[in-house]
View (tube, rainbow, N blue to C red):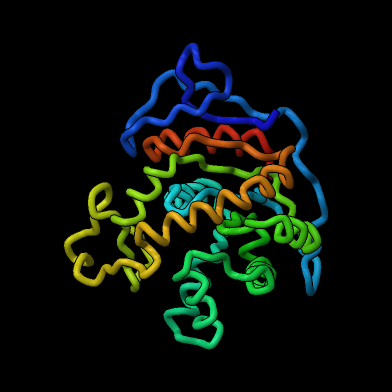
Length: 262
């Protein structure tokens, strides 16, 4: 069975996902289930050259607004890996109004996935460098079976894959209240994480952060979710993402610390 980290309520059975109705609510009686199988080991031969990664190799996944950004910041701070977010790279292209950015914006505004060819080109370039040699955290890929295959062919083999699980209604609530600081790239929420007073005026809502588009994005994620589970079943850990960020991060660390750095 797929390893699973969650807050489980007694009497509901092992591995049952119990999500508090209020985002950020604390859960008790946390049970942890972690795979005892050995992680993948592979030579990280990247397109254009070979590179040895001495730190952790991690993928984090979840539906839009599942809290990946917050957890990525905490993972980077603790483990020193390079955070590689395709979403940030694509949005930079959009803000620059490049030809590539205009194409990406059409996909992002409609809630559809950006084509694999574009995603893979970004990933290959981002993983070539000394910073990535210290370990990497992929955020935003893979989303499809083709992307899983492409990452494997590029030598980007994760030791652990984190999948954040959050109910649809919570994802939508988080999305419609989300604010973005175009200068720093930081993300806030009108209710749960308001921006500081000195940056509040410049914060904006992204064009794709609305309920209709969000529902489409959730469905797109669900359609491809099984590809991630099937492709990484030996190293996948599912985590209840509808809790406080510190509780979620504690479970992530318990999973990652089972995998020693090479």
